[in-house]
Image (cartoon, rainbow, N blue to C red; front, top):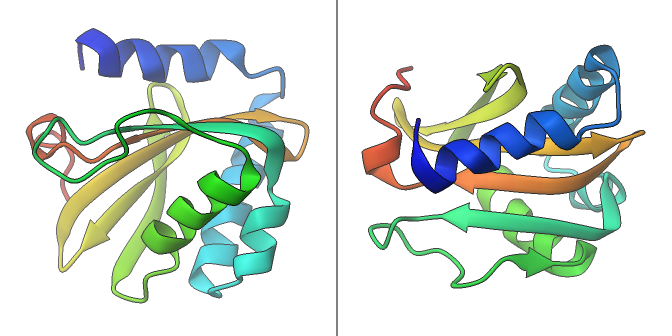
Length: 137
């Protein structure tokens, strides 16, 4: 992956002050709360100042600017991850665990996070289909 997307994902790996095992625990816990449709659990996993950047590439609806704060980021992620139609799997995203989001066998997003302790500090979601071609179910 190149350009802005590559730099987002690269920053997510570089900025994490949490060890790899803790990072993976947080990502797997995020998948677990999503699969349980636990809205409150998802919100508790977010740092109060969390920032989410979404790349829809002008092809998929996405916020024009980064979302900031647990209420806004939590609301967006709830709509994405707690949708009973999607399936989630943990995969390596730029060398760290991330989440691949699929719907009806088609990858619709890749979520990378920066974790501090047990909280998600930053998140990057790529939903631009042109940038998801290398991901397969």
